[in-house]
Length: 351
Image 1 (tube, helix red, strand yellow):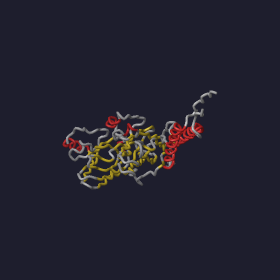
Image 2: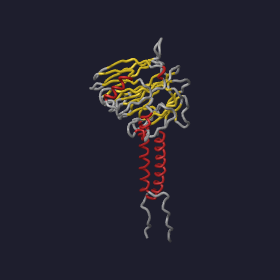
Image 3: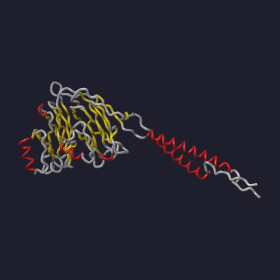
Image 4: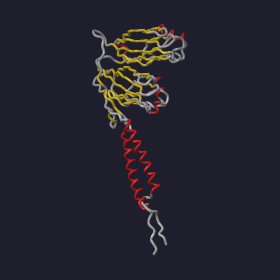
């Protein structure tokens, strides 16, 4: 009887299948390892010392730039100054309508949001420390002397054009204690591929207070964001509760980052006490998706945070990892069709 069995040369297929499985597994491991290396980790940045601005022969001077917009908003709407200093305000009306910048002289007093325009005018007729009316597309420059007695106070400003305040055109000037201190500069970025800040942990090695922090934020994506800093140390807000918290405790700094990629926004904040200060994005859903971080002032960052790297993973490395993963999958699938491993046990021969 003719022998039954595999066709010629097919006796090598189990060995080939085994080799394909081994090679495919190795490539899967290598490709996965490359992707694991490319996975971003939480990063930390150490602040750089900055040049301390000043007014020679007089009190320190801070320059604050504020945009007035037709969306009934000040950009930014949270300002910071040091008691006993001189603040130079650069006001720019970007809109087609008139606006005003009117500052309350009463510390820690929040304007009633239900007031009519007449009630608002009556309040500021008695309690305005600064008032500027800006026609459409105009500029104004004002100087504000921040009295030493203002230390620790939060002063609200608003637009008195009818119903602009009621639509949300208000903000706060937060005043911290004066005295000798230091100045540092920090930078942050909004990630291009995910809703996050890079770095999400920033350390300011402050040795004396108050310390003035200049913040620069760059947008790498195409959506708008905010960089909002909590005014109180060691506060941990949640996505569900941060809006109500900011109504009771105005932020120390709020930077509105436009949606144009590559645009930088800059602001400054004076911090008078050591601690960890949370910053977040207030755009709906962004905080919950991961846009949150911490500014550690005069305290070390928690252990376990990865130091920021200056190297970027090259595009060819990511593409190569994807290719290797694909080849490994293909070889493993091919091995299933070429031959079994381990091979099928041979049937005993009958003589």
